[in-house]
Image (tube, rainbow over all chains, first blue to last red):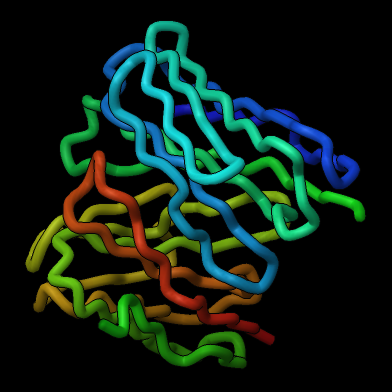
Amino acid sequence: ILNVEQSPQSLHVQEGDSTNFTCSFPSSNFYALHWYRWETAKSPEALFVMTLNGDEKKKGRISATLNTKEGYSYLYIKGSQPEDSATYLCAFLWRGSTLGRLYFGRGTQLTVWP
Amino acid sequence: NAGVTQTPKFQVLKTGQSMTLQCAQDMNHEYMSWYRQDPGMGLRLIHYSVGAGITDQGEVPNGYNVSRSTTEDFPLRLLSAAPSQTSVYFCASSQRQGSYEQYFGPGTRLTVT
């Protein structure tokens, strides 16, 4: 089983704060890195899929960067709002996986206080 | 498109009963998978499939069977339910694996007493 680590496990910030969290994954045989947003009582929804070292993706106030050589990705939220409160999951696809299985981290739970 | 649909939404089983959780997608996706969500454990992969007739085990396959006879459907069978299988189950699909995002169904909340 490949290890995908996310930190911190949980985060509490005030409305308007900017925040970031980390996803760490094995740096060898990288294929793709996914980020998902998961609101309570809903299903996970895709934010980004990143495949190239140095990739930067942006969607509104949320952005992500990827470093495949050192095995990490950062997710940034600028000016957090209460509606950003969710669990943010990353998932790693290893090139050595013959059937393309995704390995999920346990997530970072973000709470934004008004 | 309905996307990924799951039935039932809720189910209560007694220990030892069997049942099938249904999952269907109408996006012609090749890849489908089943996850379970338990507190503090995130999403854990049960079984997955890369196309009709091809399935493989994930991280926690014991006690579950799958088959994929059509592109659209990927049912998950609980052979003899145990309290440890109390969980929320999510089905997901993607166009192919790798650089394609996964679409998740609404989930099935299963309680085994």
